[in-house]
Image 1 (cartoon, rainbow, N blue to C red):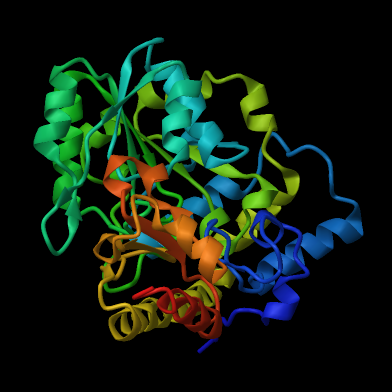
Image 2 (image 1 turned 180 degrees about the vertical axis):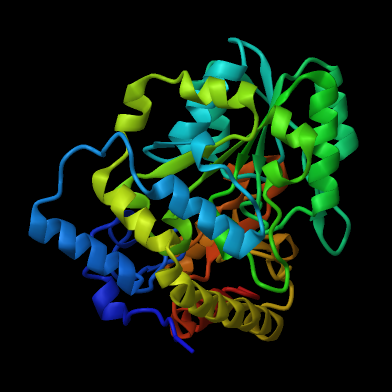
Length: 384
């Protein structure tokens, strides 16, 4: 059984990425979605080989990535994805924008389910559309899609939806039933659904994951998925994502994108993605999921014992914790005080939309020691 453990703090501080350069060295950075683990061995080998060979040119017109991802999707999700209906681009955000530009007209509205990954708001605007916010439903024990609210938005003229599946920041893995119902509603109104599935490889085994395009014929007609190895394998800086479709009509839209959309894919990103989605990296990914499972439970225990007013639901997927600190009465954006007075950088809850007031997002894709120290630092503020 392969163990995947975070690197020591001293080594992490030698990194030059956003997570380790945004704040001074006395701040524990748990804000941006980068992880602190070493690369999967197959990825390191592929990148070293490329450097040794000077394999640093443009991506080829034909690559093994679609077939490799299709095999990964079958192994991990039981999904028969068609490699011939896939096309690469630089990252998930670019794929979303380029698809939105083809399925919406300027000024049309796109549904997003708040609280949600903050760039979603900007991506919709970049595509020339407007945001229609339909908050997730809080059942008291979980978050769910508000299907009635989404239907109402389509009835009111929204022409597309940007789905986060699994959901960021809550870590919710949407059920097959809710995704099927969403597809049928969108199909009824002729609306497109673009599903951001970047966190899908990080769904815990006990939860599973349902790709939107695998929920039936309605989803195939209306749906687009944008997938990447970047979150699970920490490859955001290498620039590679796949746009996936499942019908002749949607495939034609993606095939009709300018060739430059595909050529923006990074060569290193593509080589790393092939290695990540290969069977050779499955054991590493399984080890990572076990580590993240331990970390999400550790965080629950620490919050319960040291910050009892915090409200946290263990996420189904990913390494991001959505924590309600409103009971501490630290204002709408408690991460500001935590950064200033405790030296812990968390993502600002209000950036995720109105439902994020009083919340913080914490990245637990790190070592137990860093998680523990972060919560202990925050706990010193309680009662001040």
